[in-house]
Image (cartoon, rainbow, N blue to C red; front, side):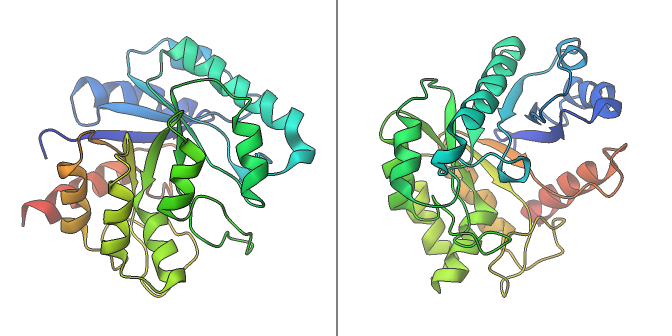
Length: 251
């Protein structure tokens, strides 16, 4: 586990956790902050701490859908705000969901975006509201990145897509690994549910020894925990999930 860089997921509304996050990074418990940029929040407090950052661009929950041509101006404005945050925080990457709808519209939109730090994240096949998601196959991810962008492999999303497609999730993840992801997301989930879940480590049915080995064998080893926070003012649950993850691997 020593070569894996663990990321703490925060939203830009998590002002109360900033100092604790800085402490955890200083103590080498977590190694970077993956920051979801929520529109109309303030960057200043995040600039004041010493921490490496990865920025997550807002997703469809905040109205962003780059596969919707009617939202082109809104999408560009939202993404540009995240790029501005990434510049000010000296972020290594920006993570972008490919949206839901027609892939040709997403490709046309991405042709207008020029930031080599952007990573396209793979998705489940079906969204929470049964949307037709994009980027749920290795072929789609390859088409969307087109040697222009990198790739963030969300292991949970890959498993959900495999369930929808009735494929062996371990073989399916290995197909994604051929695309050499720049980083990973991890959480637990149930193997009889195809829709997205972000469960605590150990609360679902995933084989975490397999998942950690996938990260270990990959050239880049950035791994963000996308597990729940029942108390938005505490990192206790993040620490518990990190401990479980390390314990499962060491057994």
